[in-house]
Image (cartoon, rainbow, N blue to C red; front, side, top):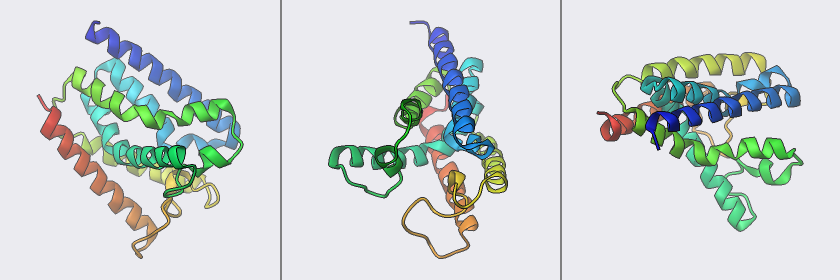
Length: 195
């Protein structure tokens, strides 16, 4: 199949999924809910696929790869054992949710492989996608913090979604954690995918 056609199809699907998730999130829980990283990442990846923009695709992968992998491990563990691992995906199994919400949530399982495949097709030309990643992360943190509350804990900005902490001011931990993830994934993408 033609490379451009594959990217076009992926872009259209991801734009649709992103719009669907944001509309559903807003309808279900209001404005703050649209700022989940997993929702906006779908839109940004969709745009990146359509534009064949390695900077956008790699920048988004820097942000979501490790969190989505952690989510997927937690999900698969719960699915196989019927008991929690870290408690991140308990909501999927324990809370009554619509079929649409469950469908949207499952994108965590396949977005990273699709993103890496698309980046391979596009070709990574730049090393500095971390710049987009940091800007996006600052933006999403501010809006999540200002428009949500501790009960919603959008993007885990108020408290850790893991059952542990390092004992620092949590928001500093959050930023340090994201910076480490961004630079680590950026390093791997450049090492293995840069033309």
